[in-house]
Image (cartoon, helix red, strand yellow):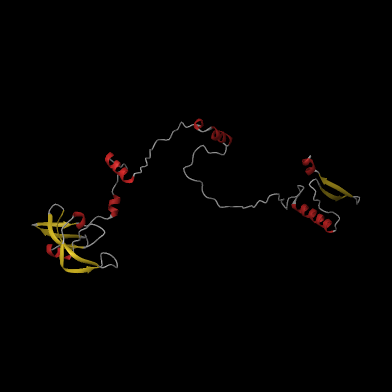
Length: 247
């Protein structure tokens, strides 16, 4: 406050140190200043104050001032009462932040042109946001041709209403690692039930163990299977679908 108002200071005849202004720092009080101040409309006084380096500009009235004016403190109301020039004065406490928040605030905030120009000169960057009503007559004619073609192609899966939020994050329920040129090991060649497929697979494995049959590595090979007849002979069944595809 002394530096802001450019007040004159004098040397303190009894310098001392205080440490309650800033933590773990002792501040030397070596100067004094005579200050004239007022509280409200009726109280005006001149006091001699010690000058302390502080982060804020403020005037602290301590016990010497309370003793001189005979101030009485009310603990419940958090107020000071005193008599000044045949008038009873009552100093109220500063309202809390909650009381200010409880007051209704206007949703519309206006700024003058000069204040806007000053803010622009200080920041040198200004962003202007224009709020407009949504256009209900929006059509796909304004969309580029490439995007218009995609919208018509996938109109069944695209929503007509644009969502204002992103879709929720979903964890992976099933993760399948695909390997190129891989074959499903449990894919049967014929549409049969699992029990018959197991029996047929056992028969094929038995023939492979006895080396009566062997797998073919040719791309043009077809699947073949020996099926026993009622008269004890064998019938060769072939799956020619692969060869037909090659043709």
